[in-house]
Amino acid sequence: MIFGLIVACEIAFWIVLAGGLAARYLLGRRRLGAVLLAGVPLIDLVLLVASAIDLRNGATAGWQHGLAAVYIGFSVVFGPSMVRWADARFAHRFAGGPPPPRPPKSGQAAVRYEWREFGKACITWVITCGLLFAVITAVDDPDRTGHLWGWIRSMTIMLGVWSIWPITATLWPGDDDGKEGPAGEPEREPARKAEPRPDNGSGS
Image 1 (tube, rainbow, N blue to C red):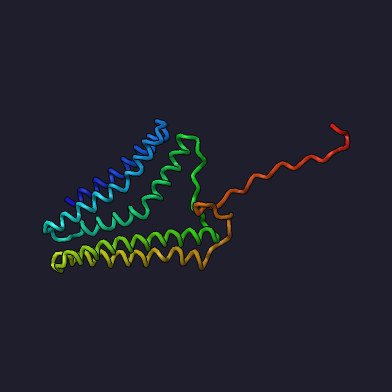
Image 2: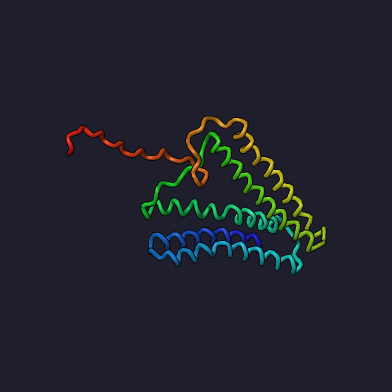
């Protein structure tokens, strides 16, 4: 049941996201779009409650319960950036918005970007492992929760592997390709102001 609910939540995430963006940019219903986009976190809440009820009813925690915790952790931390990613592309495609910025590839901007993403991964680890440990503590039955320790180990290994990217970017940053913008992207070269024409003394 839990695995099917995870799949349903993933599908619901993209449906609600697409519906919110369509309402905002295609229908011009910005308030409706905002309401739909604000409902995206509720999907995680549904999955969390369903998992808790399943375990409270005596189910043995399996891989699907661990996967549910991982899904919630990633969705909570990376969900907002995924919404912004989709919003920028939808606005560019259907509302004449600017081209979506791309992550910096080298230089100090890339170093800061990689460490920010690794920071998100750390928060994901804290949320996921916190949920898993809370379940282990609440159920207090090693025979029913032993499988969840494997997910904690897997998440820790994932975090260690993820650290390779920011460390590599720090040790070999490459050449700077522009200043860092507000979203961690290189800024475009600002347009130059027109130089004032010299006065030729004609008075015109």
